Length: 293
Image 1 (cartoon, helix red, strand yellow):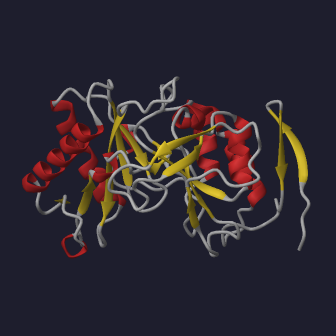
Image 2 (cartoon, rainbow, N blue to C red):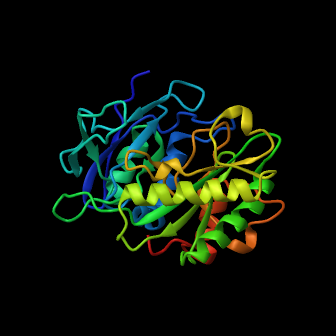
């Protein structure tokens, strides 16, 4: 059915909204509710998105329909949307090509992406500088991915082991984020003095060291037959071409869940993934756990 939509003003910019009553998740979460969620969480997610090129995972008909990754700015994007052409990194499928990435710097850009069905927002570990050059990574990430029958409880136990190991090397501020899917991520801020290659190698070394020290709990090799019952420490997302789901982003799974920053006091038995309403309530009560971006 045709939906000509409605034009709304967001932060002084005009954004067209369409199909707000479309159901995106089986339990009834609509596109309008997604736009509302991203609008409400803007103060928390925008510092995470700032100056990072955004890869969107779009679900135009909802999570049970077709999904596709989108890096380039699509035709018809508003002329006020910031975007920049960057070279695809070595080792990627589009190596040697140029990608015209959007940057979601403000509420209007966030609402525009949500209206386009971009449920998930993914970003690299580096930012683009004021003159357009790519900076060195400002964070390290370790993705904890449980292999069944291991689950989030096992991830929580391993997360403490990883954080303690990073602290030995001076990375004492490690932030846990439940992924909104099966596992979680750990982020550690960096001072920008290491190259992406150096950060990736360091993360790989730590992951393999912990896999040797805790072979019943941890695996650093991505072969699927090695993963059942263990937690994979995925160090590869520190590659300059790789991205992780942005903290506070929704996930395109069966249930509407969020990549949610957590406190270390929560990281233990009984840990669960959080819904959009739970994240908004926590922000209202406790504020942004990643306020520094």
